[in-house]
Image (cartoon, rainbow, N blue to C red):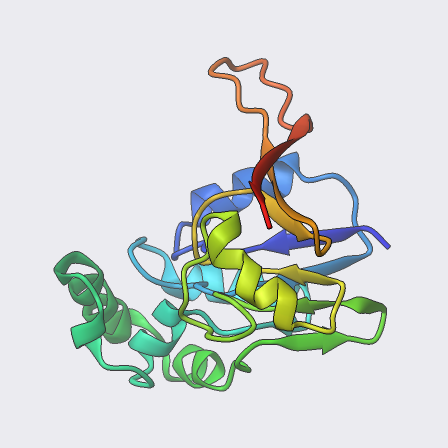
Length: 189
C-alpha cells in the first residue's frame, strides 16, 4: 500500500499543487490536519483536499477557524489568520472542517498504523524529537503512528532499547534528492 500523507497545508493552494505534482503515484491519500490557516485560499484548499480522499484528522487550525478551540492558545499571528479564515470560509466548508474527526483514526487497509495531527495522546501536542515521541511510542499498541503538526518531515522508532529518529537528507539545490533519508540515533533508554 502506497500512502500519500498530507499535512499542514494551511490554505496554501500553490504549495499543495506543487506537492501533488511532485508526489509519486499512491493507493491512498490521508490528510493529517491543518487544511486551513495562514494562507489565502481556504475554500480552494478545502475543496481540493476533499476531492483527494476520504481520510482526515482535524488539526488545531481546523478547530480554531470553526470555533472548536479558544484562540487564546494561538500566537497572535495564528489567531488573526484564524479569524480571517473564519470570515472567508463558505458555510459548507466550515461545517465540513468542524466535523473532521479527532485523531487517532485507524484505516482498515493500513491495519498496523494510526493517523493523528499532534500525537495519539493529545491532538495538539508538538512532537519534534525522540524524547517527546517516546511516551507515545511506549503507550501505543499500534506499530506505526503518522502525524503532522510540527511542519518537519521525519519519523521516530522505539524498540524498547533505544529511540531513533528518521529525517530527510535535505540538500539546498534544485536538484536535491528528496527521496533520500537517514536514521539518526537519538537516545539510548
